[in-house]
Image 1 (cartoon, rainbow, N blue to C red):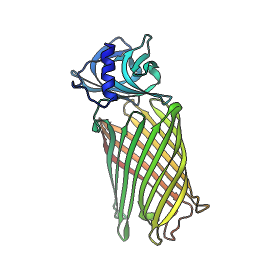
Image 2: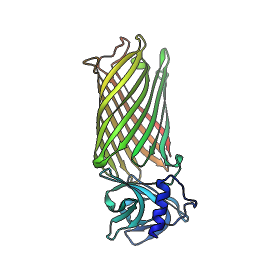
Image 3: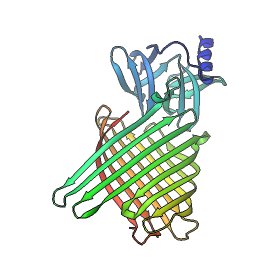
Image 4: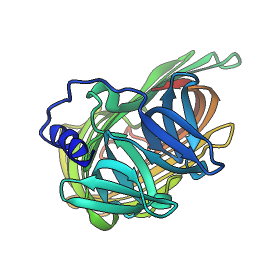
Length: 341
């Protein structure tokens, strides 16, 4: 049995998919003594997602599971940030899981496992994301507002890649339309003790601040100060190069220091609630005294399976904008309905 497991693991490491499909051969044992034969899909945010013949796809709270068995390879991530790629077997003690890797067998404390991802899934099956659309209309001022938010995340063995697009379009009788668009791409490489390196790319447009276009590319290092199966809190620091053009200026090149905080928490009791927040502080090196702040916060409330309502807040601050037409602050609140996948 062990040699078969190592053979499966070797196939995965070498990038060769096994010839057989995934059967419902995994077993989940509950703390109350029950068990279910299924296909383990993933562990995320304190819930183990499984697919069984009798019940379909269901989510099980992780603290209600005694242990799991599977002959298929998975990636396990601990609260410490360490990741293991291997096949799972129950540990000798309750609450322990043994992961057999090519480097040996590791005994993991089940309570410290924050995520489990299958490594045999295709590229598209390893994508998680959401898309939501909002619409507001005010009769008194004939003001209309459309908002669109879309994001997707790919989780690799020791890295994450995320792309997010946000768009806000406002029209009002007797005034010029206002268009605000952001495209953010981040790449994070994870190391021991919850340290990570990060690459950041941004393209921005903001009519309210007379910003025609801003491109930014940078990177740095960070650390997850808190990481549980429900909450993460991270800090990061680095540097970035940016090139921006305002309505009444030529292109301006900048060097900026990057400091940031990231927060994410999740409650899986019905209704499910997720709160995310981020803030980037960008002091300008070439233009002393100029500081930009980018902040976003979202509260997401699940309505039905994969359908949610979202309340969002954004803030864009520039202490000394180069353009005389630019507002120092641009902030707003949006509401929308969306779908996650």
